Structures are given as structure tokens and as C-alpha cells.
Amino acid sequence: MRSQKMTFGLEKAPHRSLLYALGLTREEMKRPLIGVVNAANEVVPGHLHLGKIAEAVKAGIRMAGGTPMEFPAIAVCDGLAMNHEGMRFSLTSREVITDSIEIMATAHPFDALVFIPNCDKIVPGMLMAMMRLNLPSIIMSGGPMLAGRNNTDLISVFEGVGAVRNGTMTEEELEDLTENACPGCGSCSGMFTANSMNCLCEALGMALPGNGSIPAPVSARIQFAKHSGMKVMELVEKNIRPRDIVTAEAFHNAITVDMALGCSTNTSLHIPAIAHEAGLTIDLKQFNEISEKTPNLCHLAPAGEHFMEELDEAGGVSAVMKELADAGLLHTELPTVTGYTVGENIAHADNREGTDYLLGLLRERGFTGECLEVYYEPVTGAHVGPRTVALFFYGTEK
Image 1 (cartoon, helix red, strand yellow):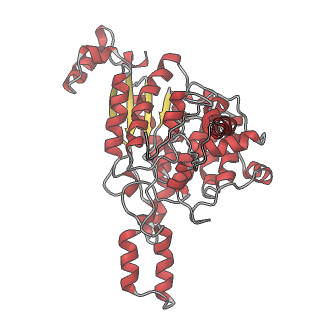
Image 2 (tube, rainbow, N blue to C red):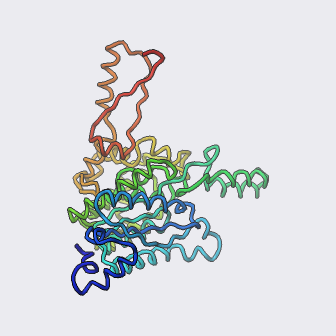
Image 3 (tube, rainbow, N blue to C red):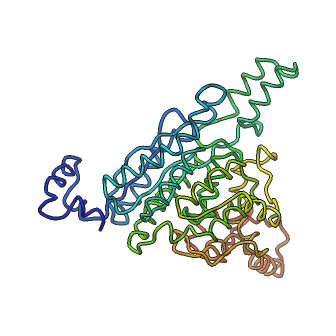
């Protein structure tokens, strides 16, 4: 194990002494040491809850036989940094994040890494570090914020400022909107840069299905974090590394999903930078070529009236990828951190044939009521297996 550089042998007795000072036991030192990169802080709404996410990740690592060791990464809120000199530091922070993670993971030889970002520059910064270090890794984001009251979000507040300026809204009405548009933790609820990059982590194959869409405040996000912690131990065991997964074809998939979801144009800044760290070259010409062939399937805020929680309810990124794969637009044979291929991951995203068959059997037996079809959320879908259909019913009589 890589971590034996600081845990094994006579000459490493001083190293072990320092690890004992952390409260680690001999048993914990003999297990794989997993670095947990946590960008939690009390400045960025999307990162406010990442401490709880990290605890769940560490629980998953321990359940699977590893020893987690958490360290921090910085995070800038693009919204709070906007419209003053702070905006000059946002993109720069991406490189600082990448470099600082490289420093920590080289100075302390972890066997693997779990990355916990959520907002704009933190996600690509961590993906860049992942490619540069090429240790067994998984990314586990904090999840999107829920929409505000009356289907509002941060953009609604920006528009409200304009409405006050032109006399169609009062300052009191704007303040009420301001207090209710962003209801709690999570990355802003539309398809802005943060949620775009979190969705593309799935498309690249470096996150479990659901990473981009499971809302931040719900219990499924905590369960998802535990599964991510368990999964990284499997990556260690099989020695699966980021560059084994993130190939030129994987970037083709990511850009295709980018166009189908209607992601932020900032992905054209981040995808080439991530590719560069993986030893690949992506240019804007490839974005144009893929865009010409790819249908825009989603109209999420600010391009439409829908929010990330609705994407999750509709099946998440997996459902979108299933549509693209059915149209022959994705490389479905590629590996992912799940241990399955892209095609195997999304096979459970839709089973219209199975659903119609079950409904037909019910109709033959006299069922005349309404049938509501819903998708498994991705964590459950990944466990029950491809093309599973479950039937539930309720009524007024036994």
C-alpha cells in the first residue's frame, strides 16, 4: 500500500508516533488510509453542510475496512464574490485548490482519495487534482439546493433588482423575495456552473449515479455519501485509477450530456483544464461538433422553469444518459467508478417495456384505476440491478 511509506518499517517509527498522536490505533494504520478532501465552510451556502456529508463518507470508508483522514480545501462562493474585487479571485481559486490537494496527497501518501466539493470552481479544481495525482478516487458532491418559495431561485433575486429599478416591484417585495429564494444549504437550484459540473462528474464516470441531482437536504444524500465511502475501498482493492476511466471517449460523453442538459457555458472553461491534467486535449471545436448532433433535452433554470429537484424526480442524469444512449450518442462500453460500464449504469434508468407489461397484466385482471409511473432514485436503482420493475399499490379496501 502507498500509505506504508509512512506506516511500515523500522525507519517509520517516528511517523507512527505522530499517527498515534492523532489517536489512530495499530489496527487503523494497517488498513488503507483514505484522504477525505472536504471543502466545508460557513461562507458558501453550497458547502455549509459538507461536514455532515464528510462524516457519512468516513462512515462508509470504515464500514468497508478503511481508515479515513480528513483535510480541508478552500471554497469561494461566486455569488458572494460577484460585483466587487473578489470576482477576480474566483477562477484563480480553482488552481489553488488543485495545487493544495496535490501538496497534501503527496506529502501524506494516502492510498486513495474521496473528494467532497459542491460549488463552482471547487468541483473542477478537485477533478483536476484527481487527474494529476491519479490515485484511486471518487468525487461525492454536496447536492443542489431546493427551489425557493413560488419556484424562485437566486436568478429571481437578480431579476427583482431590475424590477425595482424599473418600478414594477417595491423594495419591500424584493426583500421578501430575497429572504425566500434560497431556502437552505446546497448549490444554487438551477443548472448553473456548480450543478453542471456535478452532473458531468457522473457523465465522466467519476461519481456514482445521483451525484448531480439528489438534493442536498434529503436523507438520500447522506446514504449516497456512505455508498461513495464504501465504493472508494473497492477502487483501492481493484487499483482502478481516474485515468483508467477518464479517457477521450469519456469526455465525449460528458460534453454530450452537457449539451443535452443545457449546462453552464463555464463548462467550456473547466472541461479542457480537467482534460489537460489527464494528458488529453479538448478544444472548443469539439464542443461545437457535439452540440450540432445533440438534442437539448432539459430546460432547467435559468434557461427554463424547472429546477434540479425536478430533474432528480424525473430520473436524474441517468435518465438523460439513457435517452442519449438509445439515440446512439454515447459510448456505453466505458468503465466507471461503480465497477460497471456506462451502459450498465443507465440500464435501470428506464424500463418502459417492463412497466407496460405489468400494467397490461393488471388491466387483464380488472384493474381500471390510475397508474403512476416513477423512477427509482439512483442509489436504489444501482442496488436492485438493471431493468428491475417494482409494483406498489394502495386502495380503500384490503
